[in-house]
Image 1: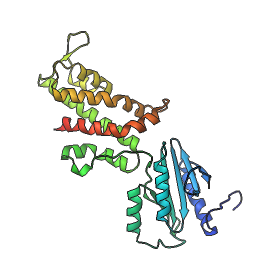
Image 2 (image 1 turned 90 degrees about the vertical axis):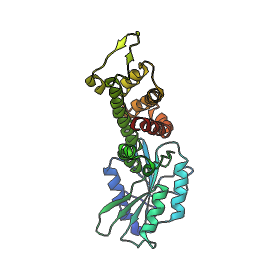
Image 3 (image 1 turned 60 degrees about the vertical axis):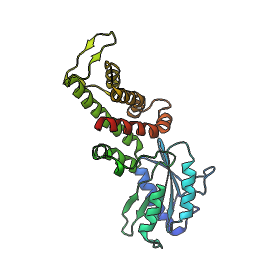
Image 4 (image 1 turned 135 degrees about the vertical axis):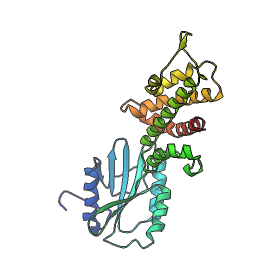
Length: 279
């Protein structure tokens, strides 16, 4: 194929590799062919980069679970958003093992799977995950109903490898619940606010509803004689607010590194805070 050179895959796979290369290029990735990766277990067919993500892809006619595991180990040892996916060409050779069994293995390893069907259609069977991100969340099914419903969308984002979106969604949920909690306390005259100058501070329902997460942090800090739950919710909001700002306003120097470091712990902080807000 003029101008295109593949050395590590069979000749019958080259035209199919081009289908995958063009597909990812159309998705906004910069795509390199068979790059040399220091420390990698093998030479991938494609390397796709789209800040902040790097994804390695093997175009294959038969899926090698040992090779997939080696790539999982490599990507899991990286410090930035690194993913691995298998691009399987269905028309060249059958899988050789039951698809359900194979997909269970790849799903467990959080490795992506694309299938190029005999009719030329491209199907994403499993979304590739950021393997370098060490986030383990409590099982959603073990949570109380209200908490489970509140976090369902965020958990779906994490499952779809969008951990940034999952974190932002979780922050939106706890912000909404914190507003409701604060106004309920004010309306019932249990919560009284005191300004920084030491004078009583009154708030209407509309004013509370317009509070940002940062505004809520300030409001909870101004509660006169807070109970244990008030204090815990206030600390929760104060903890997540700096990282929520980074997740919302991209481009700040060091933001990605800090978010990757903090997001796992902050999700646990959010879950604990929501347990208090929804109990």
